[in-house]
Image (tube, rainbow, N blue to C red; front, top):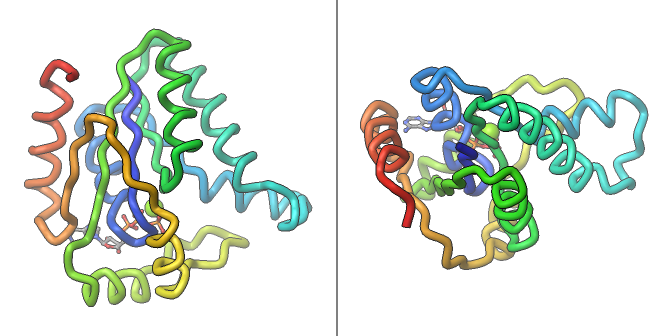
Length: 171
Ligand SMILES: Nc1ncnc2c1ncn2[C@@H]1O[C@H](COP(=O)(O)OP(=O)(O)OP(=O)(O)O)[C@@H](O)[C@H]1O
Ligand SMILES: [Mg+2]
């Protein structure tokens, strides 16, 4: 199964990804560390490293899924092109795709979490609240069947809801 997360920076995707990966004992693949690695290798930030990072994660996900492993892709998935990439990959590999969108319903808490946290990704500039506002505007509505979680709810209950969702047949 391919589990694709979605949500604004600081919304709580990586927390859900981590909790799911521990519960399912599966891989988490994230785009931000992949992009930061390209920059550390000397690839210019003016190059399309954001797209490249999505493609790197896609290639790694394909390999794991082909081996029969579940994969969680920890990505923002703001735009239709990004979401289409996971749909195409799942179709190509003949595997099930589940989208889980994470939101934070309290903007003050969302901002506080964003500004307090440090992921320690070498070479990566942490997104600011202004970046989040910009991404919010470009975050396209979508019609896929998906689970939406609110990161104001406790992590344990979100994990339970997510596992129940993944257990149910798609559709
Ligand atoms: N349900 C929750 N309860 C309490 N704190 C949470 C919850 N979910 C996430 N957090 C905290 O909020 C902060 C942001 O979460 P996280 O790093 O998972 O966001 P993200 O969506 O992965 O952001 P990015 O796209 O920038 O990687 C972290 O410090 C995380 O520990
Ligand atoms: Mg994250």
